[in-house]
Image (cartoon, rainbow, N blue to C red; front, side, top):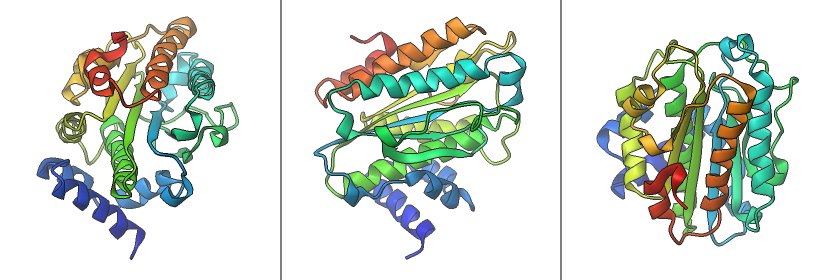
Length: 263
């Protein structure tokens, strides 16, 4: 069985269970997307010895505007602070984390927290474009494939995902806000996924509108100002939610509805 066929089987399995609509399946059924998703799947399900799993997935913006705004280090620090916050949890054994940059490079596939690579000036040099829709579909496809893999093996799974950008989509060639929304809506219906987004102010983009058109709920949208302090605080808010999400199944579906402000 080829790797791509395996991923298609996972999506087909989700479709048969009523977790994926035809529209979402169509968005995920793009040539080359299987190889990109495969690059993020990481650790083998059989190597995870835990009664439940939490998948934390982060997509930092690596477009040139991050660097031109002087925010490269703020984004590095924010990502690294999320790892540190999760490492302080009691349930670290059940958490797997994955980082894929906005332009598709995988910093690390799903792995145990202690194996996560911290972002530094050696592995993060934001100088590229903003294919927000294309890469969000790849990222969410990876979350879906990995969570379905665990579900098919009888392991309960919850997911928390953060998209980060400081601009609207400019370079997508395959996907649209509508195709992203089809996937997001299906995932949210399942009530075991949190999909959050951070739009770092660029003085011209209405990030609430951008993310809402992608299907992301208003209560899971962060719109920090364009300063290191604002960005740090936004990452802190996400970290708190990721930590809460890792603390047990009870109340998770209420948390998905409550957003960042949920207790």
